[in-house]
Length: 236
Image 1 (cartoon, helix red, strand yellow):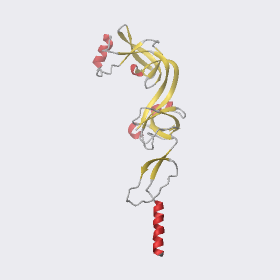
Image 2: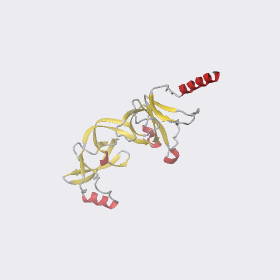
Image 3: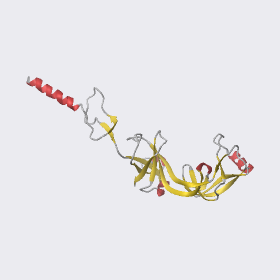
Image 4: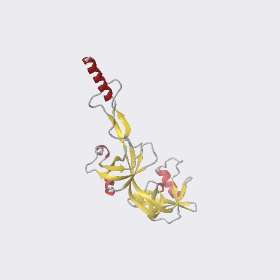
């Protein structure tokens, strides 16, 4: 009877040990156990808790001068087209581990206070850091601008069926709109690339500029409005 009672007590203890209770609410992210296999001290179940999420992105050294704590950022999870808001909370003092392969870069931490399910631990995301915000300025589509040097660029304008290359000075540059501080006036038409045409060679570039026309050009009017300049980068 003593042996049987001991076996029963052991069985009940083993049964109770098969029930795992998470210390916090969340979603099961990883199970390090397999049916029929013995568990050991390294076996675990990972719980992804609710709350904020941190995304670390490596920013090239050449862009670091524009990055500082408190800047807003847009975080787009892999496979999604809808970004969520974030803010820079930390900037690494030492280069990132990827520096040797891609050039010097520093880790920048972006805090997302209201993350979506796609921003689970170990997931990937694209990060766009907003370094400049401007309102009520002259803008053109970024695809219409060809940059020559910092702050200097040119656009192709269209007037009475004739195109001409116009030097401009640019301000804030975003992914879709670019601020023009000098060189254009409100209402002018700028030529966009025709995405249905093959990429031009050097010869066709010269012929198009000197000949005064593009084959089936797309047009866009210069407009006023506000835009945000973005430092676009991604976390591989």
